[in-house]
Image (cartoon, rainbow, N blue to C red; front, side, top):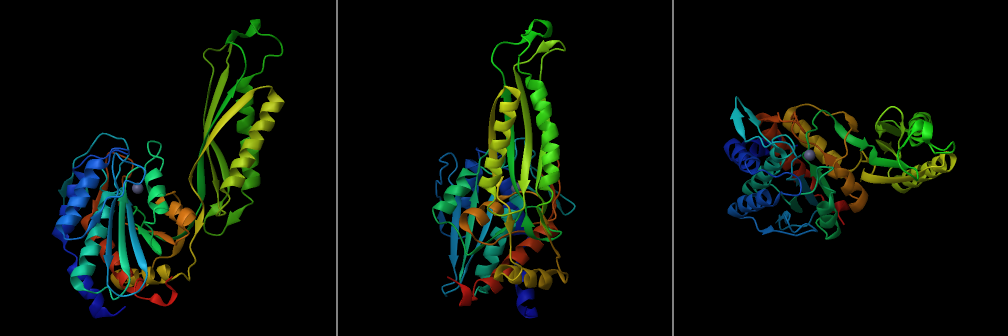
Length: 395
Ligand SMILES: [Zn+2]
């Protein structure tokens, strides 16, 4: 990228303004499904900045989402910056700035990142460096599981709040995440007819729910070895994992229920329904063999995704990152499932997760350095400058 342009954009990022925005977002508690007040706060901030703010309800009247479209006035692509305003359900930690680091609920996951992309938007407008295309900002509730089910993002996508590509400032900064696995969380409930009964009093043919559960654990281990043969060079391999098994009350009583919880992950985009039906068939077979009844939930958190390294978003991002830091990011995997997986699956657009190298997500000690927030704001603005005006491939 042109050096003068890069410097102009970098210098336009206003540290104080960025920190103020982050603090104003962090100081409003927003556990998942209760992000209304912080969405109002973000809308206020953007409105005071002179942007015209939309508040699509998007299937969650408790906390209408926040959307801003900034149009360069010339043709080009739409680059979306998307973030979730909700935080995990942990005790609230107020914002605190100390020695160049910002602390508090959501500082790392992901109000800091949202503040950074808001700053990128301001910089693009002030420097008049966006020569074509548009920026679309979206921020919403209902992200963090198990409290949220991502309904608001699904509704936003359905209602057309979708760019030609999207950047998501989650706390991932050490690679260019070009592939990731899909994931579903399952709960299996194995039951039998009748009441709990002393072991010596039970009829001989009483189904053994605990043994059926143990059998399922063993079969999942064997199945996982088969699944591991389905691989992707970056994303890894398919897997099934049981992390919890609960059954029984005391040592000599035959229980009526055994509950298992675990995950199923896959590397192939679009393999959701296959993974779901394969699991259901396996459980039905186990129920038939053990004389038990088996019910289950299979909650898909996100599909597997891949981004083409030749995609224009990747090219624009890489040159922005390199211009900004003097370094390159190697392609790697995104080990978690985030809203990028939903954009890839439901909107079919390239979704790149890149945010501050922040720590402590999902703990009481979230922490992000101001330098990282500034860097993210710069990289987002520079990516847009390259990506948006190039209308050759734009729809
Ligand atoms: Zn997050």
